[in-house]
Image (spheres, rainbow, N blue to C red):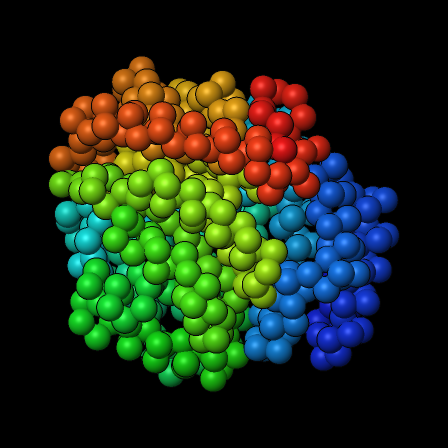
Amino acid sequence: MLDLKERVIDGVVRLGADEQRLLGGLRAIAHLGKYIAPTRGHRRQLERLEWAIDHDHSAIQLVRRVIASNNQNYLRRLAALFVEHTWEGHRQRIRLQKQYGVGLPGFIVISPLADCNLHCTGCYAGAYGDREPNLSYHDMERLIDETRGWGSRFVTISGGEPTMLWRSFPGEERGLRELFAQYSDMLFLMYTNGTLIGDEMAAEMAELGNVAPAISLEGFREQTDARRGEGVFDRVMDAMAALRRHRALFGASVTYTSHNSDTVASDEFIDMLIDQGCIYAWYFMYVPVGRDPDLSLMVTPEQRRRMCETTWRWMNTRPIFVADFWNSGALTHGCIAAGAPSGYLHVTHRGDICPCVFMLYSNLNMHETDSDTPLLDAIRSEFFARIRRGQQEQQNNPLAPCQIVDHPEVLKDAVERSGAHSTQEGQTLLDGLHPQVCARAAQWRAIADELWTTSGAWTGLSDAYEGNGWLSPG
């Protein structure tokens, strides 16, 4: 099997030099793969790939962009990710699910530090208030090794600002650069403000070929500088230019609020990201967590509706991978937090294991256990189990997936019944803000139900939402 996997990966990379041969090869793989797909979901993905190639869908135009703009190091890692993580890794996670009695997530998010060279309004990492401690290099190895044991080959690095650790962790000689080289068979998505990425770091990322920075933007210059500081937009443009020069894979991370949602939902903005070389764009809705949360920054239900409709349209019309952490729930069967199968969990700079980067609550710290499997222990915990139970019992529409802002009663109940604690001071989400968040959630669920059941936009996903209490898209 190992030889076959390597032959498939080598073949895809070789074909990368010839776009038409690559697309022809991918179509052949999709056509044949349908008959050996491990699950119905995998088979559906291959059927869509075959259809997309035949119809020159925007996703295929994106493949062309990836081939043209990224070096072979990235092409190899992307091909390997599909074979080793999505297929072989999935089989391994299914086997382990039977052994452990609980499903396993597809990836984890690690925030090794809270420190940052910027101070952006509404940042969930900034909500912690402190700048220390941080995870050590050994802590990172411990977490990645456990995740790799599940067959996962994908880890997300967040912060704080992780590029501050590029050369070395505090008091250590090794940094993220060495960590990524050590785990060369994995792909790392790294959220960054981009201001520390210069020509040298961009060249090193391209040489590694397994780290894809997601650079934060709030819109154009006016919106970005208003939230992140004067001159930040221009520094981000410089970072993207450096990454383009070295043919490194990168994208954007966009936080939308009531103030900038119209801007970042405009075609002009997404086209700017494409022009700058972004291969993907992650959209994140402002969530009122942490100290002094500002409820006025939450998008209105109508603003969220526009974002939902727009990002879905872009997926089908623009050569860039766009995903909204909330409004793309239709593609992930709803909420993916708390270690849901194929989902994820989050480890903070203090070692607290949380269901989600925005759920600032935990009942297990990796530093307070001698267990070799702290992540599995958290997944099995009552706190995580209650979040997952809420996903199953409360969700009937994947456009309203979130256990924080769409079903806030689930998070409140899970925290109170399991004894989980807030991972930072001043958290008001479960008390002072709770009634207001509940009211906003009810307003959105009414709009989401109308969108899901009458717009017709998601009818292509009907077979994925048969039974189990889901509303039918139509």
